[in-house]
Length: 260
Image (tube, rainbow, N blue to C red; front, side):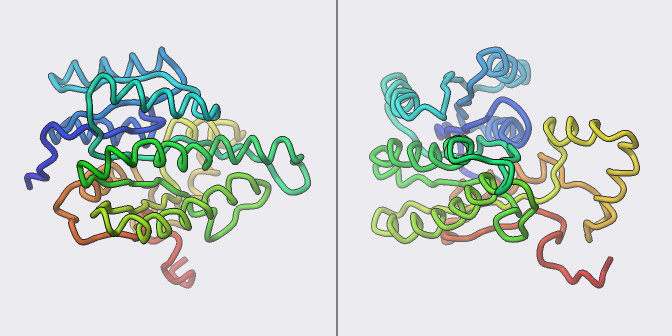
């Protein structure tokens, strides 16, 4: 299927690895022009090299998105170089374990800046360009907003806000034909997830305990599966889809627990 993404300039925060990296690759394969936004110059360059090694096109800009000024400056720089933006993928964030008991006011606010404040700022600063292109916004979220997890108040609160902002923006941006959707992730195999699994003494037993609870095929969601849904939602093949929270999770959140 031709998704009509040829030449579309789409920004991907946290686009150098994991889910963001998979979305960047999928966009490039569809002949879009993804722009990686991330804090690590080394990781950004590595991801760009992977794209160019495939004979595809992309670019990167390095920014620390927890700093509000960096959010504005990076969008200004992208517009100076390319003149337009056709889509935004808000993806950067980390499950940082700032809990109710363990956290402080300072750590909680830091978690919000890591995980949701830059979602708002990148959307705000790209909005004038998205109005011109009638582009779209895709937020990447987590099941923790709906299920809780324990010990991660900052991350859970941020993901609740991501879900709410998805629907709020979908309403606010209706007059401009800008679609806003979210992909909700449960158990996805990313570098951070693998690092966490490897921290257990019996990592195979821990992984099996988790995958046994995933209804569809008792396996982790791959980042490629998330990316494939992302490119569809960013394309005009989903032209009447907005305000949706799409769970790419093998049925983890919604299917009957009796299946287990």
